[in-house]
Length: 289
Image 1 (tube, rainbow, N blue to C red):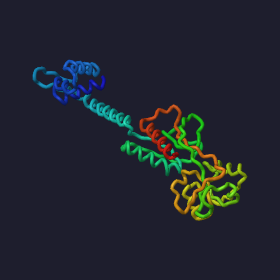
Image 2: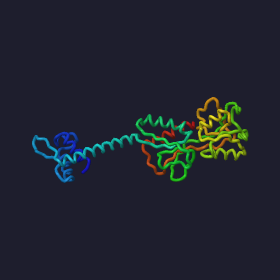
Image 3: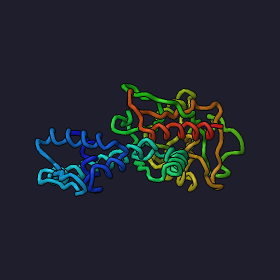
């Protein structure tokens, strides 16, 4: 049996005749008869008694058993069709991995735009500072660096490093690295991007004096505001800092960190995930300008 036969049977029961069912379904009456004949062959018996003349057809005991399950199957098929339509329209679920500074600057814009276009979409966010990043069980992952292995990527932007200090600590304008030799500094632990920063200092022969380490961007900035020391951080972290702080370029400049969007190689994206990639690239291009 197939769903068309079951739909034809349900229409006959609802309409009370083969003719009215044919009109409802857009079939000829002979087509309806053929559908029911095929169904009866499949289930091994008559599903309707056909008295002939003006009398309505009546469902048989076997037909009632078939109809009960037919309506359930038809409802499930309709639900699946509706779900597929929503999926193709961009609704559904997308799982996105992120990290601190991107979560506060770029990700909120991405979420707002996705939800504006697809109000019923289900966006799940996962913030983890892992290296290598967790990619396999997520649709997309923002990561501050290239990833090795079976991963595809798109570069979003370069994120330059800058010096942030309590206002009045340094004169306006760029700060030479030599001015940071033995200067008190607040820093991340020796994970994430911090090794790159410390390697850049070492190449320049500069040895700052680290007085506090924390994984929290806000804690770093709070300690800088308190005057315990300055910090070298990517520009994404420094987006929108208050007037108590000043941001300075470094001379010579550090190599910027690179922000990528990653996903498992060979992954077929849902329309929602594909649109999330497009929006992320658009936001990054605008931010970079």
